[in-house]
Every structure is written in structure tokens, then in C-alpha cells.
Image (tube, rainbow, N blue to C red; front, top):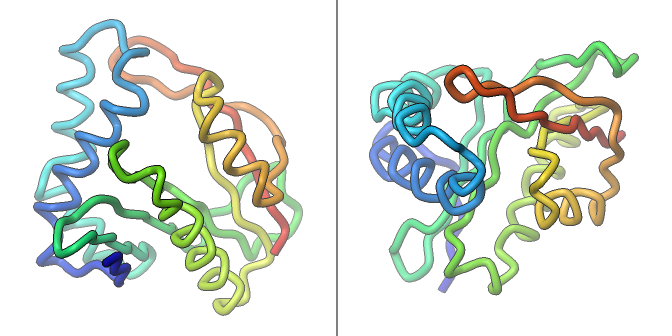
Amino acid sequence: MITIRRATENDATHIALLGRITYTESHGDYIEDKQNLLDFYKKHYSVSQIRKELNDEENLFWIIFSDELPIGFAKLCLDVNHHNLKDKKTCKLQRLYILNDFLALKIGSQMQDIILKTATDLNYKNIWLTAYYKNTKGIKFYKRYGFNQIGSIDFYVGETNYENLIFAKEL
């Protein structure tokens, strides 16, 4: 049974661990220096960092369970504008990660529907995200939801730049 609910501070440990595992599954092969990857995790996926983000009212988190086992999470950042978007009532889909073993269940689609409905209900006009240009599976997923490429951005892990594409959707 799949359960999706808003995450709380009590979920910080699960989300930090899921973040590390799912990021490794989706991007780990591209990161050349594994020490850079470990440093990235310490900065972005420590329990204390996730707890801080969970307590920030500008962030909405969800956690996904399969039979009580945490298998994924998502993060929506409110009021994050992008200079390529004219309307300033914009939010950013920061993260949507699901463990590889559960991707076939199409949970990402359920989560994406929840995120888009939430953004619409909160009266946002646009939503945007970034995706690594080699992440063809993720890019195909977002395009299926009507996201269009509007630019690119430098994304550093350590000293190495990994070009990310920027996608946006009008709500």
C-alpha cells in the first residue's frame, strides 16, 4: 500500500537517507570525484540540514511510504522566482526522488499530481525545476507534464560543474 503525506521534522532522518540513496541512484555515476559527492551529501543531506529545511515555512515536503517503508520524497520551495519567468508568483520543485526499486509503481506521477495541485491551490502561476542534462528519464517525465526548457544553469558538486537544464510550466 502506497501512502503519501506531508513530511514533518520527525521525518528528517528518513529524508536525509533517502536523499543520499536516491541522488546516488540517479546522479552518482556522473560524479567523478566521490569525495565531492560525500561532501555534497554532508552539506545538502545531513539530518540537521533537512530538519532546518523542514522547519522553514517556505518549503513543503512530502514523504512516500510503501507498506510503512519510506521510499521517496519531494520538496516544493514557495516564492522562488526565476528571471526567465515574467510572473513573480512562482515556486520551484526542488526535489522529487523515489528509490529505483519502486519507480515501476508510477509513484512519481502521483507525487507530481499532488505537487502541481498544491501549487495551483496556493495560487502560483508558474512552477520551475532543474534537471541534469544527462538525466533523460527525468527530463522525459517532466516534459510529459508540460514542462518546457527555458534555459540552463551551472550546478557544482565540489569544483566540477554539471550543467542543469531549467524547465518551467505555467499553472
